[in-house]
Length: 541
Image 1 (cartoon, rainbow, N blue to C red):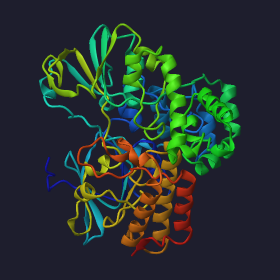
Image 2: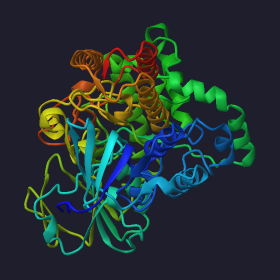
Image 3: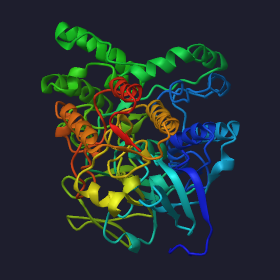
């Protein structure tokens, strides 16, 4: 929609895009500074990921005691999660509770999609337009749009011809969907597909899972939390707040095991068993860092997980071949937690299609046609096919910086940022959950999003105190950060694996590890050093 030229222009100190975990906190911090700020949210309510992803079985896999805001101890203690890994409805309620407690909604404009943001070199401000035609003039633009918020919806030829219902997990209807007794296809077996499959397996009539890339999985241990349990976590508020900021992935656990080479095979097995039984991501993120660098170590850890999976699949040869990875190592993909996922495939009403042998060719009116010519009939097709991760949320907005340069066009050639928070050539544009920072994939999101919001806020406050109105990373600093990012990434096995971590799931996307893999504690140290030294990597004028 073209913006009517006679509409009034909203003038702000700062515009925030998104009202999820980061957007809510960013709105609070900038408002606390006394800035005239408004947040713009495409959805009708707060929550970001937890507003949109309401598919069956959606829940997070960071423990409730660390998936938290850390700026208000009383608020932490006042909300009591029901279990270790709460489901989507509870998380959405929590974020609404936070927004209401902080009185944030009055400064959030819902049902508003930002279409474009152009930097005006004359005014040194951002000209922003919404899909509804509103125009916004803001000094600072802060994009808190999430790392998994650009769903890949149009994946197969013929989708519009399907006579049944096609559902994308990230765009699930708020009113829900009745799947009872229906013939349901699930395309995709990543973390989201796994949650859907294990949840609807007893509800559907028949379910066919289209499997391309098998996943290593860990059974989730999800105890209920009592008031006494939560009081105990509340007593550890300050300890946890400091702990999560310093660990490798922003969780309360870290790589604390002795070095791999110092242990006997039996001692290594004991460590793996202990962490497996914890039922969290600790096996991935607090066992042996050597598995990310050493192929021999990776194979031992991977085989440990394969053995656990084979046992649950009753050593069925066909299912083991289809569902257990052998061509990449444990932890080089996102590791999902699950509850009864593998057992779903042992049910008589659950069928599989091996998309490595017979890929999906197209969607037809009756269902899904595979490369062997078979048409699989369905009533409902559930697409758990992922996202244009990290970069997609930003490139779906027409963002143009100095000289009219297009962020979409530049990132089609090479994805670059300065610490994942600014981009050379785009003054006063800040972002969270963007490429080349831990928030792009490898962090407990509340930990890293809050740290980025704090850095952005402090950077703006510093510039204002210095009488500066424009902030932009230097080309030299961005070059240095990209080089450091790549050097760190290229030491690991992660870059040798095709996954959304590398952008491999989007055709034509430049190949680069989206997330900084040098560790959350190390990342925060470097961010703190920039701030303490007066932001030498960022030109201010």
